[in-house]
Image 1: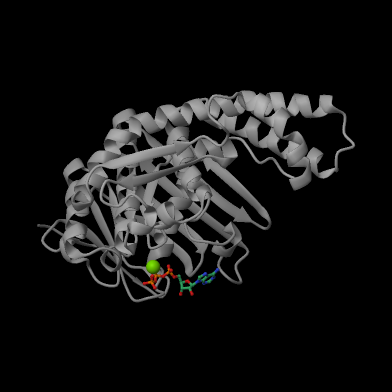
Image 2: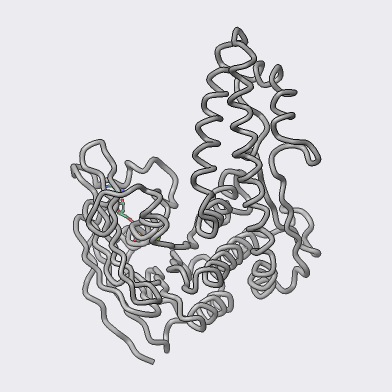
Length: 363
Ligand SMILES: Nc1ncnc2c1ncn2[C@@H]1O[C@H](COP(=O)(O)OP(=O)(O)OP(=O)(O)O)[C@@H](O)[C@H]1O
Ligand SMILES: [Mg+2]
């Protein structure tokens, strides 16, 4: 799929930008603080309903502005065009699809963006939540049932947690009904995640192996969030007293995690910062490749600050991989990244929140 048009209003320093995009590589070039990352953030917002940068979604709203909106026109491999939008007017966020009000889930399932950016190493070195989000984004796109199960689980989790916080004077039947719901939805989510990781694993071997061959074979480990060999319902019932003392649910799919280790770097602490980044990049590329295999089209790939994140050989390898498969790629940099010189690309200059019409360079 590719974005043919990206229209941004009131997002950070971008008061108004209307960007037409084509096939292949797009480079957004300009000084620090010009608004390059914000362009990628807009695309990412349409595919995730949030930013990849820290902070609440509301910090995206341009200071002093009352509304924010991002619209994207997406051309799919089969020629179909999807029009997606996400905006905030006053205190309310609204999602739109093909001219009508839609759910965030509908917008997100229409538009797929994977983004490698300076914070991406958190996928390897950061909190488990980051890794669950990555996993669930992938599962969401290949398993139709996932969103429903995930919503059921979140609702039941919230209910059980509020019972836990009442301090124990609650009839056990009340716990039982939410625990049954948690267990059913949770077992389903776990099964979908497991299936997804099985599909992802050969892609990870290829993408990470290609970026970090010196570290040897990789091993993917997954922890589902409660002890193996036991049903989630049974574990929740057993844990109830302990959870009452803690005031929240300590076991379940919301505690799942996964990790990657290498033959030559069995512990995460063995990895350099650059190796963490390359591992994270490999994970994102693997997810994009699996998406392509399942859906018949590549997601849009964003690479923020490529040149400051990776050495030249790795930049070249990534760009080569992505142009080879025909993905639409959006790259940012203070200058045109070296591996793009000599390739065909659309180059946009970004200056103080303004995105200029592109210069098209051809190889
Ligand atoms: N809510 C906001 N309202 C207005 N301006 C904002 C807001 N949030 C951030 N900014 C400003 O918008 C600009 C956005 O910068 P962005 O991160 O997109 O720049 P960049 O071109 O990627 O820079 P760098 O090369 O440093 O990564 C910055 O100048 C920042 O100070
Ligand atoms: Mg930036």
